[in-house]
Length: 260
Ligand code: NAD
Image (cartoon, rainbow, N blue to C red):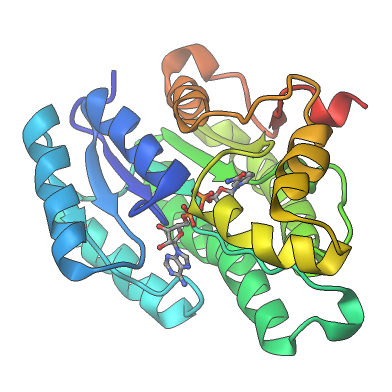
């Protein structure tokens, strides 16, 4: 379905991004992997992905909090593959604390990585997509793009922001064969969720087990974590021709959380 196309997935060395890279490579796309982590482990991932799917996979380790690093990654990707066909803005971080204790540096980092990075990849990828009259942008937002939870001021602000950004760019690109959508997963069991459990327990004064049962899964009527594979499958659908008229949508994938 995506044979010969080139896809950038930011934050694809772990969790949801890695699952999306896997799905897009499985559909034949060449992949630009991005994200932090151990160099040896990332090289193993890169080779494995390329070998299993018979596609080209390159790694660009741009720090998504730095606009100039993003610009350099986009330039290198275009040099290798020509203009990108698919951009998945997925890199993200979380920090859990009451607003009066929220570290200013964390606020800045979350806004930069979870929101501004998508502005930069889109502003740099759109001209190439417009030349081809085809493009797909998928922003991995969150149920927190639609509803709030306490102690997540920066994350909720950034995710609500990306919903607005998604709709704006969708309108600007609509006549050029480019769709721009956001997927809003509920809780997916990945390192990002696992790491916030101790802080959530501290902020709420409850045990880690109670966080899982009474905070995370309590939000989701299905009482199940969303899976990485489910997010990857929806991303793949959005990249296909069947989704050509689906644009500017903020799509919940949250086990019914935001239906409350
Ligand atoms: P994760 O921690 O497993 O993966 C995050 C990825 O982003 C990693 O590859 C990491 O290296 C990368 N990253 C972090 N900071 C970076 C930086 N400065 N520069 C480049 N890469 C950076 O987390 P995940 O759960 O897979 O989250 C992926 C996305 O999904 C995030 O945007 C997150 O907000 C969103 N999301 C996650 C959940 C969930 O429950 N896990 C729910 C809704 C939305």
